[in-house]
Image (cartoon, rainbow, N blue to C red; front, side):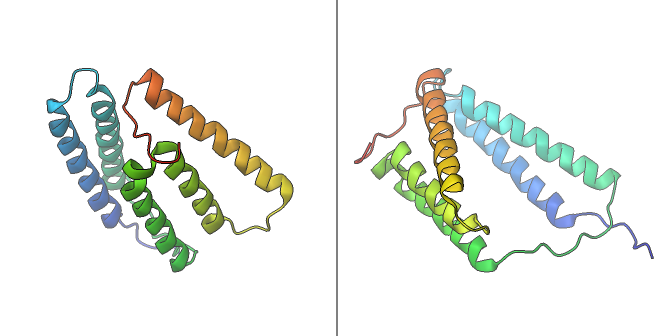
Length: 152
């Protein structure tokens, strides 16, 4: 039995919010220096473009209702709490420190599988490469001033 295709109203509304946030980010970046405004304007433009594409796809091709996503609410809440803590502690403890602790906390929260030494080593190596790469890109390539913080 086929169900009537429906439009993803929550997804369309969320995309509209992202378009508004992107426009506000571009407007707010007008006070930045020419070099300092490159990153926020680029990310805002990508966000606006992706949100607009999603809205167009959702309106032009409605989909059958999806099954309710599996998962646990405590994990979702813990993820939000870690990200909010990262945002508030970012300036005080620095980019690398807060990102390292947030990465480790998100791994513990999100991992459903059994921990093995190989898995832990792989996650540690990938985390070090990604965080070190992001730090290098922001600090040296984009010249974004990152807070040093108390630890490192």
